[in-house]
Image (cartoon, rainbow, N blue to C red; front, side):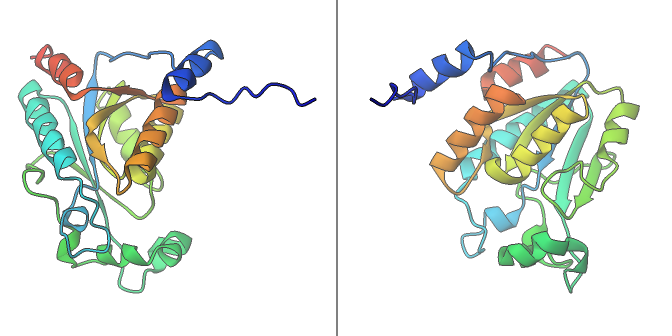
Length: 218
């Protein structure tokens, strides 16, 4: 006789199962946050782009977070992906994903989406890989600024957002992922990655909760 299956039958059962096993604890917002807008550029918003992801709602949510963060006076980081023309600085990642050619230097698809353009004085991190921490000065920049909490918005949930949130956790920053402000080309992939991030590495919170927190900093 086979043992009874422990496979949960619904999302609610999954949540109960994970919490019973010790996952999904809340970290909470810290005292010195920064906002990071991850790779939100025309490549994901232009319908003719190979990376178009239908994430207009996430862009609008990210714009609201950006405005609130500026009003609160917290550090703001923007990331962008840029490769040299032959892709040599993109290594295996560039070889694996043909759509990354959208980010060869000079391509207008790599420019920030409307309403998300950096202001003077805001940090811009140029990267070649998924995590905004990999091969960049982001960790030391945040440490110098006294940041303890990193609020995440951008794309894609399963790629650069996930990788950055994981590395934020591993570098000692509390990762806050704003559900409405991140997006992916597939809803099921988006949902699965948010569930896993919330269970193991980050707090996945609503836009309203994040805005209330930001407004309270003023």
